Length: 373
Image 1: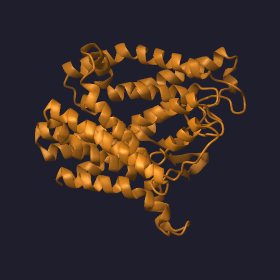
Image 2: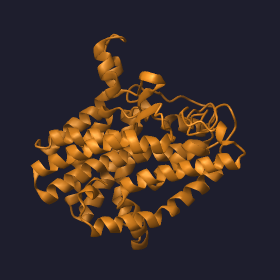
Image 3: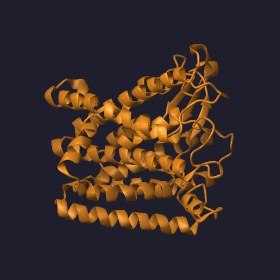
């Protein structure tokens, strides 16, 4: 969650974020590349642990019917939230000219599917999840006609897709639900790992992390399957390494899933070794995840607008309907990378107290709506 804020500050405020991809090796710098790459960890970890939390909740309450009902309702709620409050926080566009289906909606769809199949043994759901992760990269090779109805229906489920709507509006599937569902199902099936004794759990997570990263390196080195973008030799050894690590997030390729989830397992192995003080600080954010997600977007966007005013732009030149977060198209604006890190730190620190308050409020109140936050 903390790392996620870095990506969103960069996305809204960096000088080149409107015109340049931070992973385009022809224009990027190592610092900008890794600023973006490290945030690749966020979405798969969110989705994986969302599945894990569903497993732990089911085991704690031992009520499949109640768990199914909660997952279905929460899934629908997250989808609604994505298309309203989250999209508004991203763009501040009253006309909703660009409607994004992103990580919150993908988690919502995952919860709905998981709820519908909750009676299946967790290992079966895990097998389905692994099959999706390893095989969904085959979808482009299926010989659909480009204009066929079947292709039109299935493509948004597997690939990023822009769908024109009425009145100049565009619906963009940024997080195709099928690949992300695979990650959630594997996360659900991995829930029983967290029931192990701490020593066994740590050892298992280290083994899994090393094995999964080793598998990533092997498949990536072969350079045949697992990602739409193959790595190539570059002008320097460092940029060749960047090419090797430059895996595809939209949609999440097999190699993207392997490297990010491999790192996740290693992080889980050593998370409990952090000092009590650090764990206490981090848990403040972890106890209010959806609250943090929503509020941090609004805070970053307000800071972005303030930045534009300080850089001399008039209100009349700030256009929220273009999908550029209000930043004028074709006119230089934004902050250098060092300032992005400074704003990121300020945002994270500023949200500590609000998250602590909300976490305490959730712990001391039993309002029904708090279950959905």
